[in-house]
Image (cartoon, rainbow, N blue to C red; front, side, top):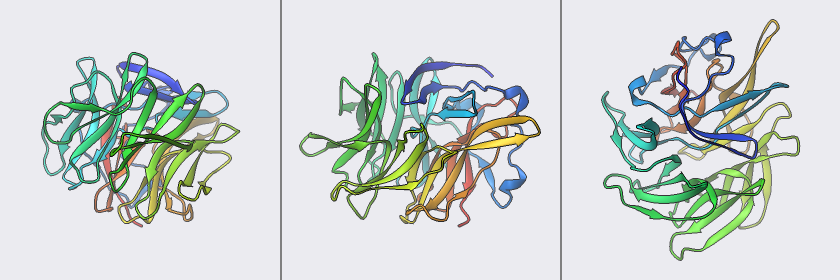
Amino acid sequence: MTNRNIKKFVLTGLWIAVGFATNLHAQQVDYSVVSVPEESGNQFIQITSDADRLCMPIVKRSGNNRISWLSNRILDVSTDGKRIAYLSSRNNTTNIFIKDLSRQGSSIQRTNRSAVLDFSYSPDGKYVCFSETRGGTNQIFQTDANEGYVCRQITSGSQDYSPIYSSDMKQIFFARQEMKSVSIWSYNVQNNFLSTFTAGMNPCPLKQEQAFICARQNAAGNSELWKINYQTGTEECIISDPQRSFTSPVISPDGKWLLFVGSSKITSGSFTYMNTDIFVARLDGTNMAQLTYHAADDLSPVWSRNGRYIYFVSQRGSATGTANIWRMNFNY
């Protein structure tokens, strides 16, 4: 497979990249099957084609069975549930493209930038906020979700990424890297004030309380999921495992389930292969279940707006390891 990395840098042990992934040990892993026996009961539908040139997050595998990956959101579903937005690498640039879910066909380019890193829709569906790598920094912008390329710059001169709106659209939460630490910040849309909250990345605001779920690395270097109530100051670890890392939390539309990415291990005789798969748990961290088991890297999951399906990025079904968007049903 062609290795076309456009931007690459390291954030707290997680590789952040835009482009196609380099498949380490690909000669030992078969991506060509669509599903494996452990995934029986799940129906997998391919949404994009190779011509859509989907950006696959780089996954870095190293010695001692260590794995790290891009944890930012590079997929999102429109508020009406009819379209899916994704990052695509074309003509040496990386931008947001939008595809109609009801029919096959080409996608519409939504941004006209150089190196968009990640993004999310606003709750009312009118805007998209995104981060872009520019001159050694990551800056956050807002643009119209449906027309035009005009952007409003939200932050500047820092390493900012993972922007996401609060449910009332009064704040845009994001992660900011300073030296070797990453913390959660917010931008107040009404008065332009910036606020900092706590250590973490991948913020995901809750609807019914002044709190968010985020990923946070522990002393051993593994990533955990935490619930942060920024009104009371209460911080609670809800997903943790001494042998795994977890990132990319996304709350289900009904507010009952938490979708996220976790590390896993595939073993066959003397062969061991570290992998990324999709997990789900109740919002308090109970009833955790692994949903995917494929040797391909499954990343950047998002819910359909009715909560019946999960969309994610994966190389599954491709003998060449080319990534596409896939949809699976949610059976819980």
